Image (cartoon, rainbow over all chains, first blue to last red; front, top):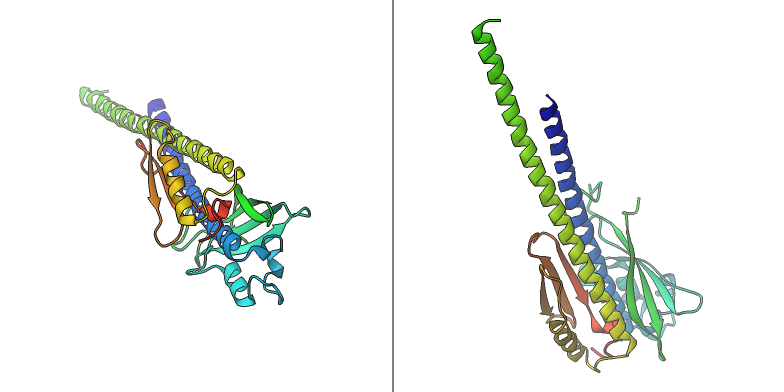
Length: 154
Length: 130
């Protein structure tokens, strides 16, 4: 009886490890997608729309910017097929010194997706936070650091 | 208790002991392989952090090239010379539809433990025009 109970308990531990590993793989896959999106977005801004670097994303679509028009700015923010980020830009928030930007991106969330551990096809909706370093003259982004992976928006 | 009952009890006892031993052995193997996979994942995560720090240091010295294609090629050459932790495979793909380098890291012992890291030279100001 003792042997049976201890072996069943070991089996439960083994199954838990498998589930944990699967969930870690999903989290890393999400991190990779978000990181790729950050690279694409920052690359696009550095090369073609540098006037956005020190501007919060809520001001990107305003009139009068010399490096981008409103439609293009909306396209950068909304993500979707073919856009450089391919995920939504929830926030691009420069700090007061204009030397760092906090970038928050979100993966698409599939309808019916409940938990990141068992995502529905199409995405987990997880969000990624990045610190973008700015510098130089003229100012350009020169570093992208992952700050963490957050859960989906509720 | 008759001889038949004793034999039957012994048979049931042996059967359940044998089944328990099998479950125990399988579970131990599962736990061991989970530990190996976890180590593989940690190894790859470590390699990725080294890679990101390396790019960060490169970016501090300014652009590698004027053209982003040339900068991507320089990143590829640079990575081909960079040593890797044992047990980790690295695949480098120069992208054709966009300027960038895709680095895939995979562990020998746990191929599921895989990371795909994209680096675009323009995002790190390693080049100045597409």
